[in-house]
Image (cartoon, rainbow over all chains, first blue to last red):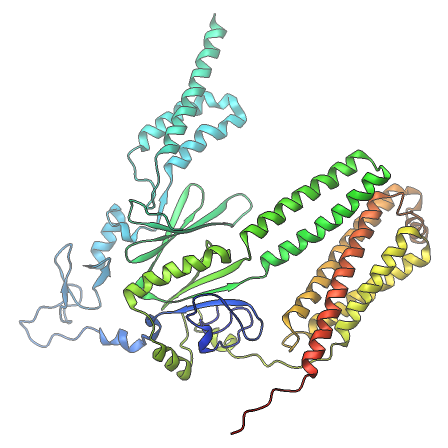
Length: 191
Length: 351
């Protein structure tokens, strides 16, 4: 991947006038339209990271890090209250947490900010109610299974981004219609 | 336009990208309070990636030729199918053939219209200190530029704007390497050594294409083994010269338009070769008596009258249009390049 200051198409180094423009500007060599936006974070060097290295405990009464007893404590975990050095301190959405709490949060799904993936149960329910129609006799099993699946997962969280429960509702409607159809079919068969 | 939501996220963009034969991954971008959320929807699961505004170093967007190439290809097919449909209607060719070409024309026209409305394609990458990530959702320039402006506002609220003096200093000190480019920036970031080349090979390609156009036009009314042989020789010469031109134009000072036209010529030749092979197979099937006898098969192919064969007519019409458009465009662009190259350099201001 090319640097922000080079043309992604021909790799020619861009001029100052080609960076942080409002509209895309053509590359001086290949004429590809480019919009390169730089932000002050690009000025941060590795020295900034080394500045926050934990310092050693100099006095016996000085608080030390829970995980690194030889290092000076810099902050307290806002979840469990353990003392942390600057190395163990993890800032997440304004909160300072230790790695143990983050791991526990991930496991119990209580930390939305570290969640990496979710299963879309509503999509599965909708597929379970529609796709078996291609081999319709199996709907005698899948239709009740869909209803069970919907009621089983109704209260589970959907997506992180806004999402309604319309797929669950549609799945219930389709499954109910299939059950009604099978009931009518069975009634006619018996009478 | 972004849509306000109650969930703490504002939608920035939504897009679609194919990631397999069966499942298509949809990607969408959402603005959170302090981060950009990239959501990849795989159908039954979603995965999330967060880019915190405080950590974003840069966002780079550039226009890609994908959309233009698709439009060009569609235009070729549209012209070809239209010009096949017209003689089909005039000479009363089979109705099935007219239905097929008519449907093709309609589909191409609709796709062209949609492509025109959507605008040119682009590629967008976000850089942080440790990674670079392609934002597939921003794949149309029309939507990507406003979305990027919105993202820029959010990032500048956290980081503040980059001072022009800082920008100048970065440029003077040399561009700092961005994420994911630490190893490759050194080799790719260098300005490639561009060299001036003679345009004789390119000119020969475009002139031969015009010659091929004339040959195809004659083939509509005439037939014979000599014409077939000339066509085969022209095709071989064109293939060799096009490959040579493509090799020579690497890292050259030739304008991008000429280089792209040469690539179009290569694409056209590839299509012609494929069509020719299919046509030869059809001829071999329809003339089983020529099996194992190449000379007789060639004679059988050469004897086919274009006015009696809708398939051959369609191929010839396509060849005429494509060769004429690419050849004439290429020669005109080359001429313009020659004039620009021979112009005297601008006068230097007195010291």
